[in-house]
Length: 547
Image 1 (cartoon, rainbow, N blue to C red):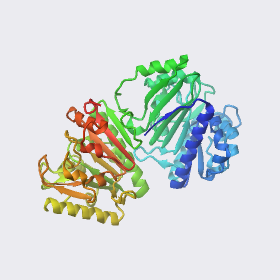
Image 2: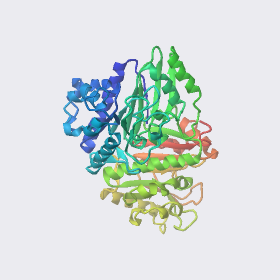
Image 3: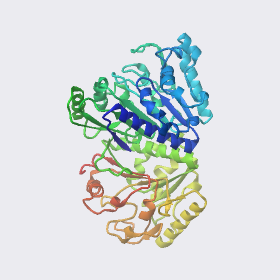
Image 4: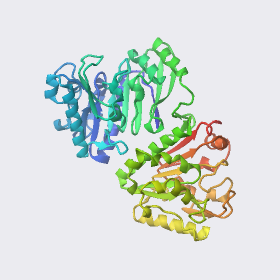
């Protein structure tokens, strides 16, 4: 998901922040009974004042909020430099959040300037709250996953108390660390580490003044010396800027699943030096990043996203994180994760899941594994999608054998399709598979698809009548234009009822079909793929060459 934010005034920025925060509050209070919010200092607190207005103040469930600080100065709570004091005076004293739900740094350590002790005690506090399930733990890393983190950025590009060039930027083991030589006074501080910041479900960074314009330009020029360049989020990272003088800045941020950094920058009405610095930096951003770029002009549908990767290796890395994050999400939400795969090169692209850290952190016991199509051949046949998946993937992960649903290859194609549909209907009755409320077809959590050079997906080929099947869940084909001729396949209504679909395509030989599907220059089955929650195209550079 990506968003563009344009705010001519601070007032409008504050209004948007308030709406965003209130919406997430309602979401998490309903889903998990609490809302964990991390604050920073500086101007951010004044921008939260909109939440004090009646339309927000009276509707938010303040009793379910839990407040933390991404960093604080190691000074007494009543000191003018204290982020706790700033938040208390400007916001917390005006909302009915229970005192026990406000987690400040230890006052005794702050009073004597013990930065190390304050950091250790704050980390212990967070770990205790993780054990109590007030804070979630991010499955793939074990770091705490706060619901919403509200951040600012300094003129030097620092965020929290992570400053450019300071070795604490590279801290990966601690949740909270400390600094005694801050280049910005006061020198003693505690701060969340970068892994904790980037494990938050939602990160919102707000930057308002012209003093930060140079830093913004550097961030969007991928200057990795600036900590703000590394900001990501488990679900969504958003940057919100206000208009600088007579220029309008439009900024897009993408979620971590797509490279997890700012993806595009557009500038209009250039009328000041600060805006020109931003425009100059934009010219230096490569068209295709070394990790990934979002083809926003293609994926205008908010449910469709197109990711282009310089190398297939980078695609495989991002696909593994995308899959692991969804596994974590659905295992927590419903105790199971239903995954559908195709054959071909897609299985190779899943290879990173069988390597650390994913192979050790994913809850494989909750996976349920299906095939979107299969050739009606013995399981040990070279053309079997089951054999391909078993050799390259299933044999390397501990998914229970009873959770792997292969076809009965001893039957005819027609009978095998009926048998597989019967299996799916049984799993719907037992609650393993969900049903789409809008279509009535089974709703798989994640469908991982490949595409052929002719634009076919599953065993749905261009011009074949099966592309129009609208009633069956699983159907069969005995005249496949690609051997072997006998196959079973999910129908489009089943594919498109999935919560999440990833369409993974690599190689220049498929570039024309990609163009036809995404730019509608031709009619190919892949162009008919959709999803109920999100469709993501994962493309390497050769596959995207005709876009």
